[in-house]
Image (cartoon, rainbow, N blue to C red; front, side, top):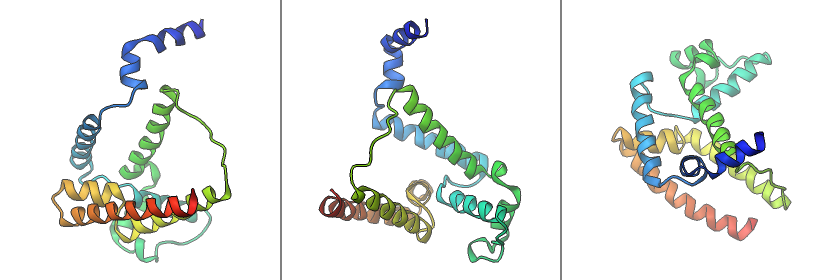
Length: 183
């Protein structure tokens, strides 16, 4: 019964259109813009991702008994208030959790989830190095591609355009390094 149902759903043209096939870039751009407007209207802040991850790390360290209140990053009243409210009361954390589960749901419903075997140690080194550099870059740039680039440009900030130029240049350099040393 379940197999017949899943076969019928897979043959449905609307399922294929909405869930299986890739959406046009313009659709993604419009949806991102709408989400940015809603985020700004509801929370009063532009969309950001990486600060919530710093908060998650702080909450984990606090649970382990480490005092983070005197750290420079958490020295402002606003940052301390976020730590006091906790994960479920932090809009940025809720958005991040929504993005994570939304991406998982999208991959599962499109039957695109795959666990791939790691082929070489170079892949592991590239992933760790790339993730570390991205995380470090997001913190020193006061945001990632969402907070510093997308949100920056959406509020007509010059820093968003500067970020766009350097993220483009970084992608070129990173791609060349990836091909030369890790592939």
